[in-house]
Length: 533
Image 1 (cartoon, rainbow, N blue to C red):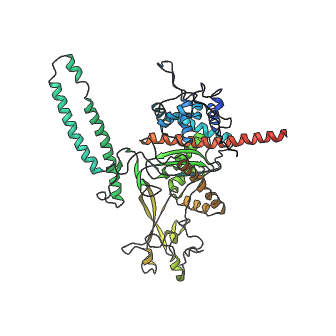
Image 2 (cartoon, one colour):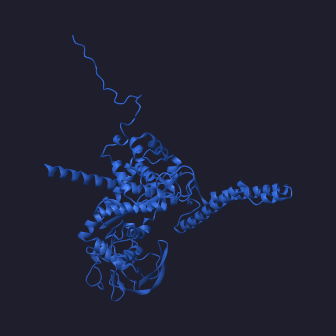
Image 3 (tube, rainbow, N blue to C red):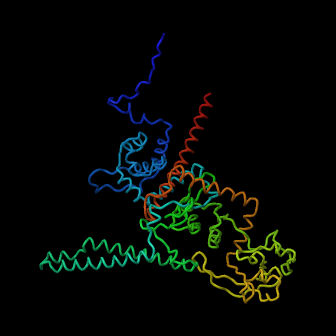
């Protein structure tokens, strides 16, 4: 009987061998490894804006910024964001060893480089974008814009309110007075002479620290008081539901999460070229109002790429009058959901002669607003006469101009009022029960632009174009959160967070660029093989 002997694979690398890589480190990285292509792309870019003059440098020479940037960007692609983990990878992972060319920067070097490279990083983002444009990836025919929520590096439960800030400020004032009194008492006990004069020229370290905390806390208190005043105007009681500022990162804001609940958040935004899913603009704001970045995003795209988008797609919140006027001024075709305030087909108020009343049988079908009253779309505007007609065919004439505050801006609004609402059969459905005057309709200077946009959005072509916004705008956020793992910022402070977000978006774009270049080279190799065959 034959006994079968189990055979095992031989050890490919004995632990006592003298050389780890045979014959070179370069041979340890395959020719089609993505890190090679990343290094090739970064070497082809201009790094002159990053290099610090070293004529007066003392000690160890600095590592080239291309190497440090490559480590950070490649780490983001590999879901590695911590500077300490990047330090470990540079000393232990073969692909990081190859990319870093044997350098092993410590975590403080990587962290400092990541934070202090704001201006130069904008240039790198622009260079990567223009390279993609030269390859035909970025076309700027259609650009989708959107924002998301990313948690700040702060706790939801450790926040300042106006009451807490006032109490803490009073405590600091008392501490400041005590430290100042102790300093004065110590100075009085010093002997006369040069040494005594020198000692009083500098504040004690404790006093300087308390003064800095006072100034910071005073700024936070003023911010909270302004927010409480705004909440009071909105009908909210600041005593029961006060404004809150996170203690760890006072620039962030407590806002609803996309997943539910509340947390200290920032709102990163991105403008995406729909043809390639390439991010062509990125920014971070501390509040929820993404529409404030619509026009600045168009301007930044033109600055970075040398031309404006052909069409700009955004969600409903971006359809403000200022954005509509700004897009028209910049000659950019704007697409955002917009309903016409004029009666449309299917609305009983839509009729050839607006001076004639709507049939009584159609009154129940007239649109209502949130107050259960007849909507503005029941009233027909006649441009020639600069007037409105109500569903009963009665005239609403121009009555003057009033001021309204919208999105923090005061604008002039034209007011039209009906002088003949008495004995109207639709009066109860049209006016508030407490109203003493006729029905009023307001019209601002942006109304013609809204009508034009609404007409464009309801065409077959407009609906087809806007349908592409969802994929274009949401795909980068899904990849950044799910694949790259960016669900919370590491840094604190709005400017630091903006810089961190630009690193993330640059890494995302480089990934897109790597895939496109790898696919192009694979096609070239296939064509060369077919030509030889």
